[in-house]
Length: 282
Ligand code: PMM
Image (cartoon, rainbow, N blue to C red; front, side):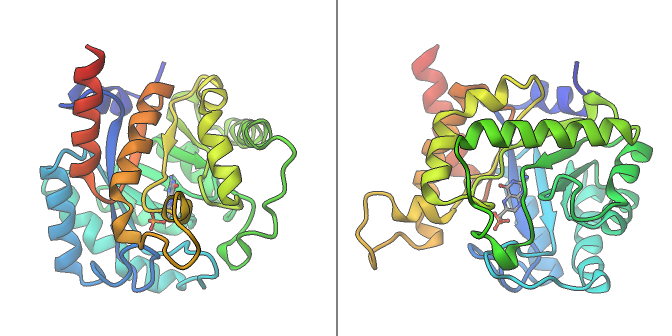
């Protein structure tokens, strides 16, 4: 049983496999596209283009989570995010807000956002669980072990998929205790967050263990560093914008593993890949 909005997004998609979420980073410093959509009009036009390319949801964020990034203050995050959410939602797009702050999530919902995507799964802001419960909006619970200022210190696992699954279940229990309902929750293993390249590959191979938790799963591999390194010697890695083919391959893998949604920068590449994979299977 999932939230009516999540069911609607699944039912209305025009390609096989997972729903596609397109990324709109209203930041000066994101690792893959920092600065490109920092201007409000550019961000809105970009979001519109992602919807035209097949994104069922556009994810608007104002804080870079690039390793080592420092956080914008709340006023600055609100200034970046709210007008873009308002404009895209006003045009009929389904918008999610990518934030770790309950105040920003609340303002974005007020401006027309329909989904809250929190890379900390509610851990960064103690007020988030209460907001999730009171709003009733779908909430993406990502696996997280701390802010990006120390991304790799906590990247210690004996069994990465098992530990990520257990920690996500802990977050779900806390959110339910705060009054959220199960149908609101979407799980995300948090590729690249407190995970080395080896951890990311292992998690991707073991995605079924996250899907088996029984909630819809969202996967964000798009343009991440481990896709730049694979098959390349040091110094010759693919740059972030050269990782869209690699990302599309992981979207096909996610489809086979039963993932509900993939979060990507290049929507066209992923939709093409899902179409081809679907035709091969049917
Ligand atoms: N990755 C980034 C940002 N937000 N949200 C979710 N749910 N999952 C992710 O993997 C994720 C995210 C990384 O930064 P980007 O916006 O440049 O992709």
